[in-house]
Length: 122
Image (cartoon, rainbow, N blue to C red):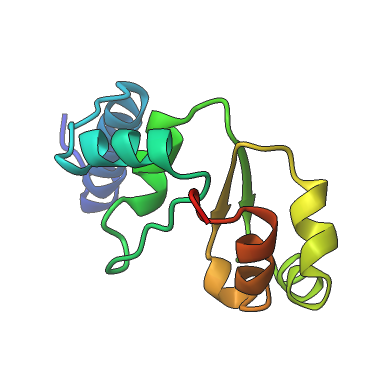
């Protein structure tokens, strides 16, 4: 039986997608050196800010370490403006502990984070 070029591409596509699905479902986690440091900071501070380059796993590590934390992303164009205009209401509306992703889209949050979660010892 001869396989046409179209069928070969379709077969490769199915094989590649099937492999990707299997890899995605295996839930493999690579431990990062930062995990221990983040856990230590969590014991000392009520707020931790993680910064770094794009696509390096900042959100993933937090979701992995704190699976029961509520999660809000300010990538959503309907949420970010409200969080920026009414930061106190926004912060009081989310269940803590919380992971606020892409917080730079609501710079007004940072002043209220400082007020609502003061630095220990001050």
